[in-house]
Image (cartoon, rainbow, N blue to C red; front, side):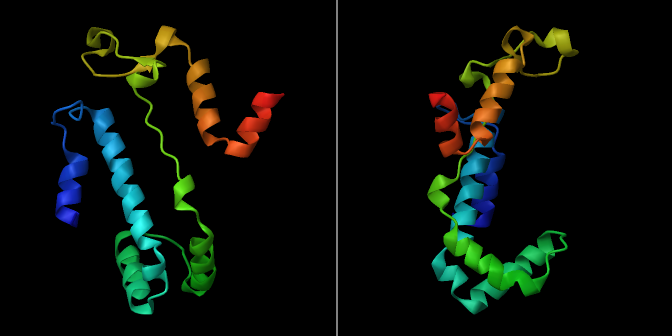
Length: 143
């Protein structure tokens, strides 16, 4: 998928098969970001100095950062150790059964999602579980 197609894919707000919602759009955005990261961090790119230089140049033109080029060897080492299969994503939507879509009249006609029964505790717990590393999460459940 080229950049123009990817942009259309992640920006689309219409579709079939449940793909026409903002939540589906958020999931598509996550898929594209994950694919870009996987491609950028592939050994093929990391071990190729020309490609690596091009990636850093594009990054530098698109993102403002205080990233210093002298740390590139450390970044490359870290990238080689990064296990992309462990990357997790999460969209807080109504499919989780934690959130509901109330009558838009309650919010001045705005389309919003709110916690079921206006109770944020299950939402906070779900986010905490998502952010907790798998080993810690397993150990906590065993207590």
